[in-house]
Length: 116
Length: 112
Image 1 (tube, rainbow over the protein chains, first blue to last red):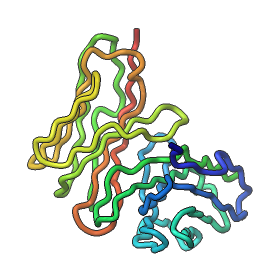
Image 2: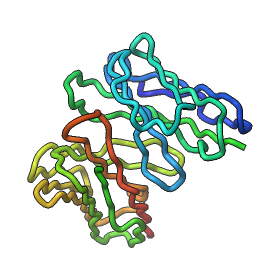
Image 3: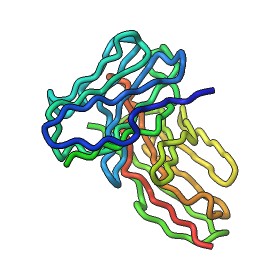
Image 4: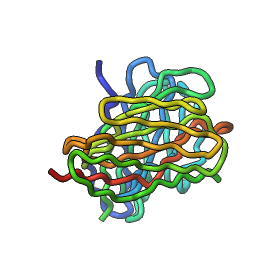
């Protein structure tokens, strides 16, 4: 079956531009996660949704970052007024457990954001 | 704050040799994940370790978990070139937000 998909795969933005990154989770997966992966580092948690509810956004680095999942499936991560330090790969993951502690997270291919 | 540390961070080894990657974490957790990442690719799930003493094996890779020592190991047996990748361990928080905290990754290069 189809895995997690993300678009665009690559995005170049000028400093100060707004960007929107899309994630299509595996069909039926209740939980959706966003991570940020800097070059040579492990992914770092940004935010988590269960269905349409954003249950944890403690990892969002600033109020320029905003995520939504209005219908409980597709999610969008928006970054306003991008800065050079926002350059990273943004990974989306989904899992299919409803319980408090979901099972394995399946990752998408990521969106590589470069801010010039 | 939960911290996850891997060592070594870089590992170059010859085909046919055995080696172990270590993953230490700083607070109580009973759920640990190992992922593989190839250059420019996303993360592929390898193992989920759910309890103390858990051991899982897939091919030349074997992972174990000691929750009392807060330590997981990923053992590579008779390495082959195809296993060259970056390996990450990640720990699930016991309480609170549903999120994974990742180690820095171990970049493994296997030479013929």
